[in-house]
Image 1 (spheres, one colour):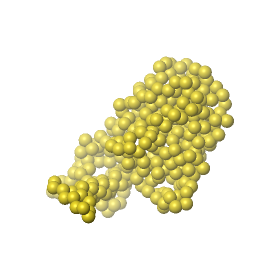
Image 2 (cartoon, one colour):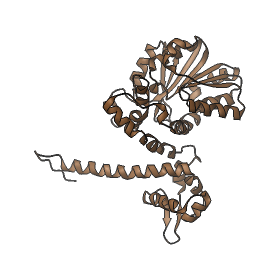
Image 3 (cartoon, rainbow, N blue to C red):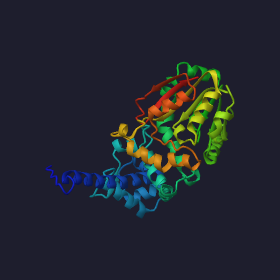
Image 4 (cartoon, helix red, strand yellow):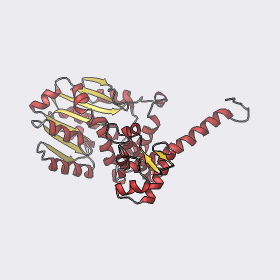
Length: 362
């Protein structure tokens, strides 16, 4: 492509390329919104592995209104997500697409499309914060913990026993023998529930600020008959002072520290709560601590958006420091050292391009 640079104006070729990029992004954003709807309504699961269906057939299979299903299929056809046979008027989800839009192969990327409508709900609130300061409280995000629980199933639950826990040598054996475990900022507690079921001799505790998330976790524990796990609504802003010394042999956080009002206080509390031979395993966002380091980050723009529209502003709503999702490895190591951990090792897992794993000892 020829480019022309004018002393009075921009590089016309670069402007055209950027315009093309924005138009493409707008179209892809529409696709993601429709993927979110298809995921929530179970449309992809119905299409996967099924013979080609008409819009009426898909509506009947799912119990949905045909006119809405037809329009959704139009969007999915235009996006190339489903294929249409114009001769028969039937639609098909290719198996290659179904593998990433359903739970069949354990990597359901449709889950992440839900963040767009969930975060879009608070745009006006965040605009007000730009002008007046403050933040948006947890209560303004009615589905965030639900979506995060699905996110956790992709990056945590699927790898918990085979890849994450083995980062700590001998930990699985200790869990089998029986130790005390805390998940700080546990959300809906899916990781704890899985561990409590796998390791009945150990005792598990989950703390989270969200009453909704804790209530959900408690119901799940009761339904599963798990007497070795307990969940508590708890603000960890003062955990550096209120943590019971030496009360846990193993502490975890999964993408939770950067959300906290006082993240260093939480880390100091975790250090305080660990027994002498205890270990802290933290999963948190893999990024650089300076903006320039995140140029070319495969999820950089998306994660900064999640930060601005949730993680950072939730912290600020509590009068916190607003650390943000993209606090980065350097800042994380600085905080972990300041919290008093004598040894910190950073691990990367092949299945997870989004997170670092920090193994920390007192």
